[in-house]
Image (cartoon, rainbow, N blue to C red; front, side):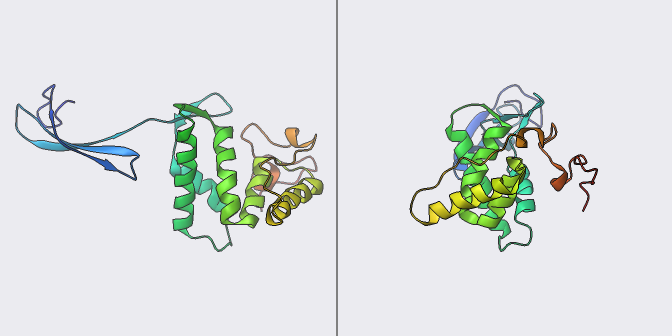
Length: 189
């Protein structure tokens, strides 16, 4: 590690501690050349592969931003959203892969969101899975009810034959600000 003060090519680790619930390591270092101390924060990288093939670093903030839309007007606090994002990141990192598809992150969001707020879960799932008909909503609600009856929960979301074509390349439909739907209505509300 280069010293940020004198650019010496080496440094000595004085202290190491875990940070952010064990997700990173904070190291206190000292430069043998100038004697100044500095801190580094080491984390393992997690890369998200988007549908377009582009890659970007995983961001809890993006998870929170996406789920916040589904939770609008619901009794869900910022702390609840931060905890959900942490649960999603832990689930994704548990896969052991350094690269993960954006689709897998969406699936990882569904479980904790269902536990947090069922209405927000239905909102998120309807956009994420491109619900195309009332039957898709009825099937999702039926799965939620089955979970309440002790019959177990089913993570499979309904999809119709038209749902696959209902989303544009970014996964958005007219209902959430995507392109105009077939009737020519704008996604702007």
